[in-house]
Length: 193
Image (tube, rainbow, N blue to C red; front, side):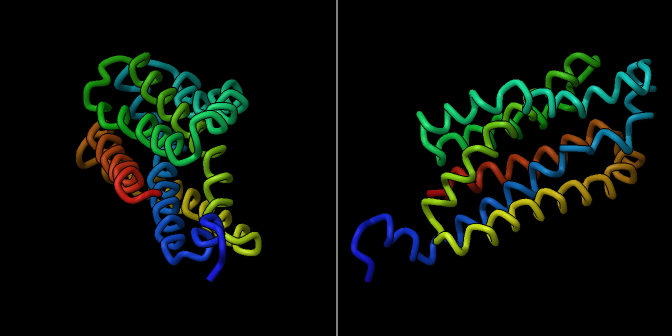
C-alpha cells in the first residue's frame, strides 16, 4: 500500500468516479457551446435581429475565454480545483434554466456570457484536479475522455435542438438542455472530492 495520502488517493478506485463525473460535466456543458447555431433563424425572427447579431451568442463564450483564462487560473490556485470546478459548473449551468424568461436579446446574451464564465473556470481547474487523482500515464486518457465528452455534447445538442425547438419552442428546448447541465453540476457537487 502506498505511503502518503496523495499516493493513496491516486491509487483509489474513486478516481474512476471522479473521471465519470468530469465526463458527465463535460458532456452537459458541451450541450450549450454551439447550440444556438442551428436555431439562429428562430432566435433572429423572435427578437427581430440580424443573423450576425445572433452569432454573438456563440462568440461571447470565446470572448470570455480570452478575457478571463489567466484570472481563472489564478482563482484555481487560490481556491482549489474542486471548489472552482463546482463553482464553474454552477455558474455555467444555472443561468441556462432561465431561457424561458429571456424576453430580449441582451438578457439572452447575458445568459450565454454567464455560461462562458462558468466554462472558463472549469478548464483550468480540471488539470490540477486530475493530477491529484491520476497517475501520469493515466492523464492523457482521462483528458482525452473529457474532450470527447464535450464534443459528444456539442454533437448531441446540434442534432436534437431543431426538432425540440420546432415542437416545444427554442426557449423550452434550451432550458431543457440547461436542466441537463445543472444535473451534471449537482452530480459534481454531491460526489466530487
